Image 1 (cartoon, rainbow, N blue to C red):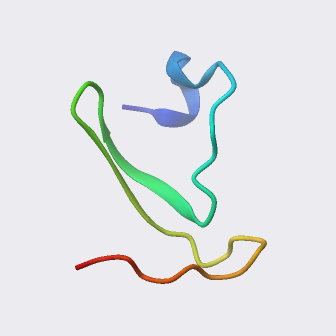
Image 2: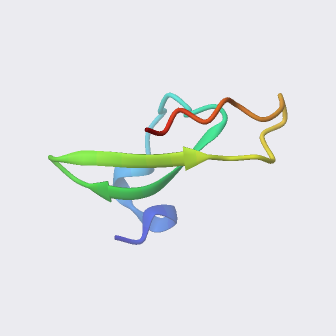
Length: 48
């Protein structure tokens, strides 16, 4: 799925803060990873 051009993102959404979407299987799950360049600083690694 081409997320930047997706009609699913044409409404107000809650941000993921210091994380970014890396995979989205609609109706199933979303995967996110830490976004180290987040303006409020790096988040803890929550993997594992």
